Image (cartoon, rainbow, N blue to C red; front, side, top):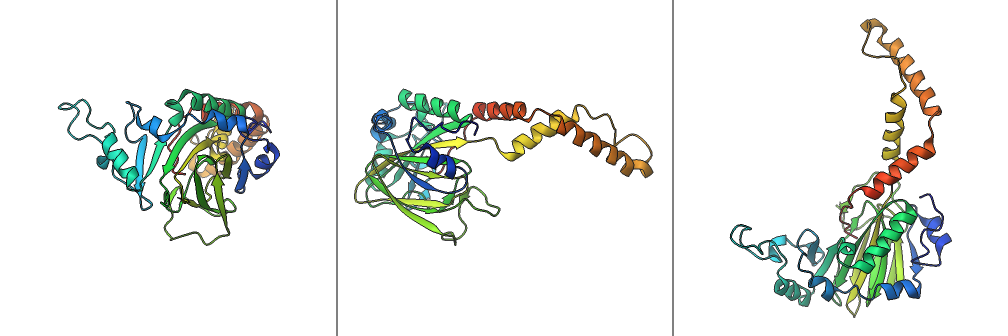
Length: 295
């Protein structure tokens, strides 16, 4: 991130979330004006969107994601123009049966949510997407899993009980469901109610369950530039000025030529404008398509 207070639209706790960013989970309170701007985000409204179809909407029951065929209109596109669209009768039946609904890229369907995502993306110089989750009372959402992005889960209706790793993982990890039943690290137990939020850094394992009332929350999913992005940009720019050639000359002198390449590369890297390169990878991150969050 390049701006210390890019969260002013969401919360007055800018310094808290800034300090926790990328390192640890933290509960937050949401400003009343921001919460009011989310009142139009409801699962009923989203289910009425004619263009909605998998993979932008999925369902989970008993913490496991359901196959798309269980919620779509059957047939083939050539025989039925509606084939592959969401079958709303099936969708509502699943919700009545306790299934969780996940609508990805919801900011593309609701203008007010799109404006918020655009504001956050601009302020944080990073890609910001949204996912809406609706879980009926007493039912689980997804099982234990990790996400590859920063997630700010904002509770807009009902309440939900979360279990979350307190800190970002210090070891190697992958996105998706956990292999084990649960992580063996320190966990936080947080209940979110309307107007409350939870920040989770990339990789923090989590799971959640609705309380005795149905829960709806919006996850703001932020994809920052990664170390590898900046590293590749640095080496790509630096190699343009390297004149030494590794592949020309006697094989017996390859080591000496490699030393010359390394010295020129180090010198070129030292002279780079890193701020300019950071701006470049930030712009790339903002323009990149956002992968669905499983938060």
